[in-house]
Image 1 (tube, rainbow, N blue to C red):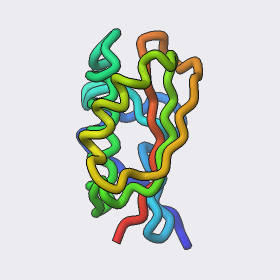
Image 2: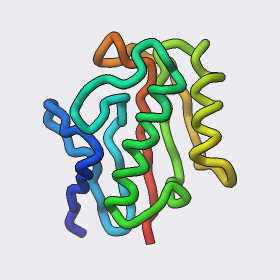
Image 3: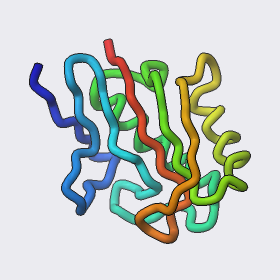
Image 4: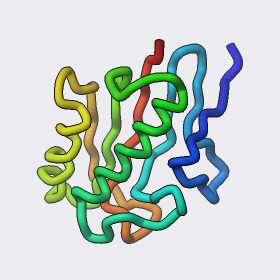
Length: 127
């Protein structure tokens, strides 16, 4: 089955060689979403809640561009630069997935830009 590239005008295009999201059949794979707004500006420097909100808004926009909703997200991987930020991230994450949240892994990493506190990758089954 051929893959289809999914884009949203609400999500900044990366300068890296990657797609915002790729759809294969009815499965959507997002790239790791970071706290860039649609203009490519970092949102919420130093604020895990603001960054998590922006990241999840980016994922939401991509899932919607593929014809789905956040209820279609089956799994996420959350990358945190500091596990002390897990509580603040979870506070916001819970508002986007209030019931039957996706399966999830959370790991501590160094991210590509020093101002990023969180990156989230998602997989959704749409339709």
